[in-house]
Image (cartoon, rainbow, N blue to C red; front, top):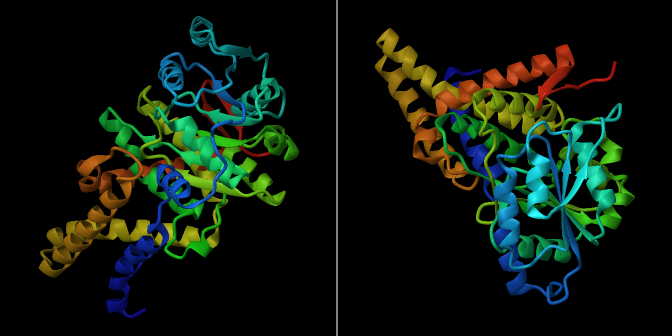
Length: 380
């Protein structure tokens, strides 16, 4: 390859990312548009909604979610918390709040904990519509109203990736995981007809109980550690639509407040398995963009060490345009702030280390650790 053309590759992938992330869909904006322009079903007589919350050792998170549910402009018919063998005070917290508690027995062979908790929660639900929420999520006061409105107008499965709230510096190491997740969901390209969701966001998922049961529910994907992606693919294979949105202004969460170790465990569990299921095109775009983002800082370092002014100036230019791009897209995904964009090389190196760690565990060792369990990632 011509050396001059090779130097343009980072810019090419920089532009390509704008193409693929040009239209990150926000749930709150979609709801506003549909209420303004369409004859969506009225919420004057809404169907009964059962909120299902799988929980394992979530005493520090669950109270925030239950508080947000108590403030909803549209009240759920019931809230079901499924306690997956917690060793903390999760169950007592639920009972103190007067919420319906389902306590699970030992995890059956072949199931992951979250899939089993969601399935048992759905079995206990009496509502026509099911809303699955992770215990670390929080809804805006009109959250349930908006989610139900989107579901009633679109049907199928509606999922929302919560806006990522962070309070401690280590939490912002999740920056590139958020970006790559949205990119590989294939929901935000400039040409709308190219957007075909490749899964769903598990922290916030809405569907009818009838549709859920018709695809086999979580029992159909009981052993899959990326249950949200797997369930959506089953739904798509059955002819149901899947609609995916970002949750800024509507749904938020704080991931891994328990420390850096929990953050490493969580992303190790999620990422390599998910990456191997993306499309070849999106995998190439992700790889090329990540390499391009790394090339600028590397050129700065090499140019300074070698005394090559042109090289470090070129690298600085690449670093600046990638930092601006990272900031631009992260604004919709979490409160990462300017510093995360400026420090993006550190976040990128962390992402690569966790990705390699995830590959090692999921594909070589065949298991990952999560919430005190050893979860198999491949069949013997």
